[in-house]
Every structure is written in C-alpha cells, then in structure tokens.
Image (cartoon, rainbow, N blue to C red):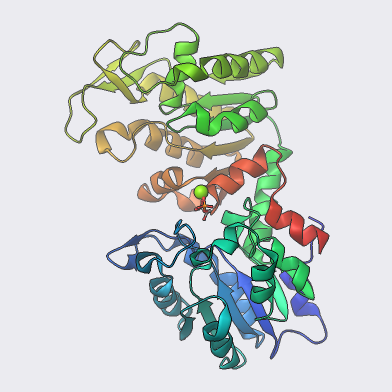
Length: 396
Ligand code: 3PG
Ligand code: MG
C-alpha cells in the first residue's frame, strides 16, 4: 500500500503532541435498548486511538451510524458509543452534539493533549454521503492531521472518507485500515488453492463478486438462498425456496465463467428444508426441495464437501451465511462452515455480520486468520475494485 501510515505520523520529529488529529473510524455498531449490542468495531478502533492518545494527540473522532438519510435521528446518535468507548479506553470521552459548526468547534477547543472527543453522527448531514466539498472542508477545519481507520466504510466515497483529504495537510492510514488491507491482499493474490465461500439471500446482491471471483477462485462454494437461483438456472427443482428467476441468466453466466476457466463452482447437493420460516418449524434433509417446502440451510453432505474443500485450501475467504442463520434449527450449515474454516490450516479471512456472528457464537474467533470489520468493503476489495477511502490516501 503506497499510503502513509500511523507509524510515519508518530515517527515525525514533531510527533502528534498537542496536534489535533481527526480520526475517521467505522463505529457503525448495532444498538439495542440504547447500548451497543456488539462492540467489535469499537474495540477494533482502540489500537489507533491508544497510540495517538499516548503520543499526546488531541483526538477528534468521527463516524457514521446507520442510515439516517441526512437528518438528525435521536435513535441513531453516537452518544451511546462514546459511553462504551470510554469504558473500553478507561478514560473519559467527550461528545459533541454535532460534527461541524460551533458545537463541534467549541468541543475541539476544550480538548487537552491526550484527550479524545467523539463527534455526533456524520450522516445527520446529507452532505456527508454526497461527498460535498464545503462540508469536507468544515470537517477538516477541526484538525491538523487526518487519520482514516474506517475500513468498514472504505468502499464509500463520502466527505469524511474521501473528500476531506483535499483539505488537510497530512493524511495517513490508521492501524486497523492497514491491517485489514494486509490480510485482504492475501486473498487478492492468494496462495492456492483459494477457496471462496459465499452465502447470502440474493444473487443480485452478490452478482458482482460472483462474476469477479468465479474465474479466479480454485473452488467457489455457494450457500444461502442464492444457491437456489443457481439450481433453478440449471433446471433443478427448488420447491418454494427464495429464488430470483430474472437472475437465472446471470447465474448461468457465472457457472460458464467458472467452467471456462477450469475452476470448480460448488452448489448444495442436499438441503435442510422447512414449510415455515420460524423457530420450532419441522425440518427435513433432502436431495431435492419438494413443492411446498423451502430450502433454509445447506444439508450435512454439502457441509462435509465444503469442509473438505477447506481442508485442501491454502487461502480461504468467507462472506455470508449458508442458511437462515438467525433460527437455530437452520444454522447448522453455517456453523459447520465456521468450524471448517477454523480447523483449516489455510490463511483465512472472514467478513460480513452473519459470518462473524457464527464464528463468535462458536468461540472460534482466535482460530480464524482475520476477522474483517468490513462486510461490503472486504467484498469490494477482493473483487479487485478500488476502495475510495484508500484511493484518497494514495493521492494525498
Ligand atoms: C457497514 O456496516 O456496511 C459500513 O459501516 C458502511 O455502512 P453503509 O453500508 O450504510 O454505507
Ligand atoms: Mg453496508
């Protein structure tokens, strides 16, 4: 990566003591009852923050939360995140009720060396997602130096991830962003065989990544409801499973691309089926989904095949659940895949909320090479797309 890093910044003779450092992190965490219900992304931001604070920086931290669509939504305030961050850092975290303007400027002016302030949700201003230059300039005015550590948002060209770079004197990558790219680069230029496990509900959501990976991936194993569109595309029965008939030609194109490149594309050969999508629903394991039933998970034989592929792989990338993972009875395939990735000696990267939830539920996190904090960002990166947040740093 040809971008300056936190090491470069901290290694400068002037250091960061007394300097105002704007840190863009991805603190977009789920909230339940006014508290973060999963603080993984807050923890992931700690490394960079601790180094800057230890160096005496005045840290101005910013993030988005959810999709408020350009207006202030109290339920999407970052205030609860500031509280959790304070607990994790073991020091106070000030909070500014707006990310620009007098409230933000006053809060920044009060910062002493080694203190941190969290700004309110960037997306309360529609200019953030529009990458508006005037808004970016206002953000930049709060600081002397810019650190981008928001890997999870690196695929968005927004004011705080891209536009701001034009208005700061120096812009560097934080430790999380650097570490994520180091791991994901291994998937882009893999030791082979490379196994990609892709799950999720819809072919339409994953079409770009399927098209990009199919010709380059030694084994591409597909799960989740999107597998049924692939089966449909081959004229196989799918019962009442979720399918996208208008995507069947796309699925056929992906299959043909894999075949033409001499790659393997694995689809489920057995299924867990249910008549109703609810906890406690009766399930069966079948080779073909009959009418009136829906495929809700990959079956045990499929899970065993995918596990065998994981044993043979040298590099593994996994994104997306193999079934309706939220319901325990439909989660076995996803859990089997999590176990197989953990057991494999391959270098592995797992991204996406549901895949990470499966890994964490089984306590397998320490046995996975890298757990990415970016679902969409890691998918875009491994398919070879430039990440605007990274491109902006490269140009700086
Ligand atoms: C995410 O969770 O996907 C990132 O924080 C980016 O959020 P977005 O998908 O709403 O842009
Ligand atoms: Mg997203």
